[in-house]
Image (cartoon, rainbow, N blue to C red; front, side, top):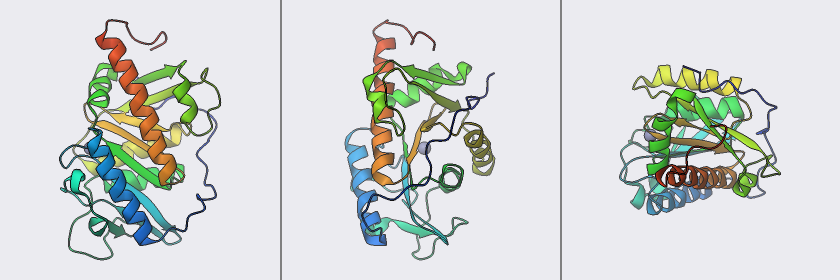
Amino acid sequence: MRSGFQQKAPRRNTPSAESGERKTPRTLATALAEIGREFYSRGWALGTSGNFSAVLSRKPLRLMITPTGVDKGKLSPRQILVLDARGTPLQGSSSPSSDTALHLAIVRAHDAGAVLHTHSVWSTILSTEYIRQGGIWIEGYSMLKGLAGVHTHVHREWLPILDDCQDMTALAESVQRGLEQNPAAHGFLLRGHGLYAWGRDLPEAKRHVEILEFLLEVLGRRLSAGLGKPARG
Ligand SMILES: [Zn+2]
């Protein structure tokens, strides 16, 4: 089976000037909690599913992330944890998301400022439907222009799909290798599971989730309506 990450393209998600807003633990925690509640309301992170993180500082690396096992519909800023570069909480008694290793791998591989993970219906269906192809080509949609570095709907976006794995260390290593081989990616799918997307900062990562979830729903509805897969899918 084709690896989910074989498309090589120029790197686009380079570190950037952050969005002007000063990042403090309070502002990031508030923004992460708002995103969690919003994604819950959209059906992308029901129950305790999904996890969300943002980089507080790079030297030393400090990552703010949602804890494991919390209802995303009731997420509050007080629940957000601050981790060191190894994923160890610097305060509080709750445990960070079990997917912390994946967030750290993405932050390092793409210099991402934020990483968001959703469990939508369409990402669950399509990541299973397209697993044999190792990913999904998406092209010809105006919404693609919402992805960083994309300026035309003619753009072809490759959304890789990785096999899911309960061994988070092994999965993080797999993700790390794949991200290094595919620096143009804006996100990837885990089979039968959901979407990971990132951005230079939290607003960009949120926009990427919205764009990719929209496009996945378009593709999923096309399949449901019997309109077939994308031409080169
Ligand atoms: Zn998940």
